[in-house]
Image 1 (spheres, helix red, strand yellow):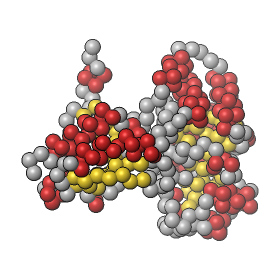
Image 2 (cartoon, protein in one colour):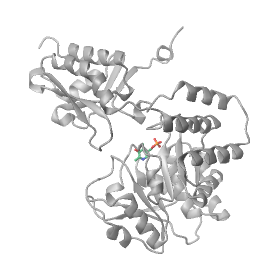
Image 3 (cartoon, rainbow, N blue to C red):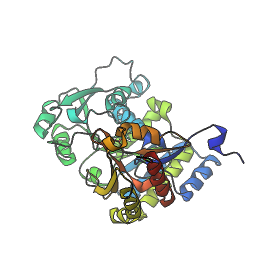
Length: 370
Ligand SMILES: *Cc1c(COP(=O)(O)O)cnc(C)c1O
């Protein structure tokens, strides 16, 4: 039978770059895939499905309430709309066009105003908000955050992410203290984070996760938080939420993926080191290539293979080598953040042992003859 790759002439991908949206993020378990199929094949009262799966997830995470959304970006836009509209029916239907004077400012540390693949600012604007930056590009204290809060502030948003500036940055609990002091809600975008409880426990009113990143669910997002705020997020399904709705299959798939995520035994960093050792040895046997184990710079339990290329000996820049590895029938993707220094990292969480051999073989072919 003709494969989907043949039918549409798609390239096969070996993803050694981590959880990348541009490559399809992650692969759910067979049980989650089966649950998605079940969802597609059945009818539900959708409001009931949303409320009861939300309550079930909230119980699992020991939070007041939860709701499945279409992705983390949709979670940001709807969370912002929720804190602006609250329970006002007229505003719900006229979010952008209403001339009613209400707080619309969303305050965030300047170093959190990032581009995660799309800009945070665009999602806030989509939700009817206006970004107000606090502090500086490289620092934001509680006092600097506090200084930007006025009667026009609708919420504080905190972007907990490796994309954000980490240096001289207040913590989530400190941001929560500022929010409480001014009686405004705190929204935390923790899209790619692995911890599903601590930001809520630190005092956030709404916390947003991507369903397909750490949780490895179907394309979806999760918003957890205080009951009233989650209710207001749900109301947005009659407003901007309609343009970003999640299907019944995504709701059921993510609910199961979360349940599995909480009990799954993850591959530990030490196990990754074990699995990479043969691969690293093989790479070190290739002229002009050296490889070693490095640990995640954000402190997560992830080991990666750092591969260095002797650009002079090979006669190519690391960028050219990366480009060549993406040609052919199978495209190989690494983490290229340090390619300007002649190094890349292989993240093997989504790479099988067989694929590790394919990667080593492709690299060997690339430098053949030098
Ligand atoms: C990935 C990411 C998002 C967007 O998540 P999607 O589920 O792809 O919409 C938002 N914020 C941060 C910090 C991210 O890393």
